Amino acid sequence: MADEKRNVMTEEGLRDLQAQYDYLINVKRKEIINAIEIARGFGDLSENAEYTEARNDQAKNEAEIARLKALIDNAVVVSENEINTDFVSVGTIVKYLNVPTGKESEYAIVGADQANPLEGRISNESPIGMALLGHQVGDTVEVDIPRGFLTLRILDIHR
Image (cartoon, rainbow, N blue to C red; front, side, top):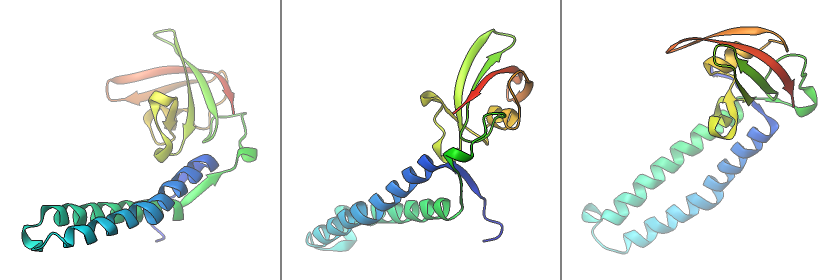
């Protein structure tokens, strides 16, 4: 496990993962077991589509449980009171200016599993997230993206 990837996330992100994990273990797993039992009652398992589907659902659920457990076990939680707004880090909200276009954007920097750009959260592992990490208000940052480079100026950092 020493080479396992550490997953940086906020306390909220860890709570969300734990809630998903608990749901899959305590609710979804039981629902699938019940569906398998019902499908067994339909007769010949070799030609039983309901049984096959329930077993496939079970395999997918167990894989997701294992994935979430690994993320939780390897979580490095950034505590709210440890977040320093002097520089960009996981847990901060960054307002920046796209210098060439003049467009301002604001995103929370979060762990990869919390990222959702449409909800204003970008990953610390994304090109923009990685480029902004460690920088301060007033810094101009070049971001290498698939279409070329972005030039961003950090306008504000807060929680």
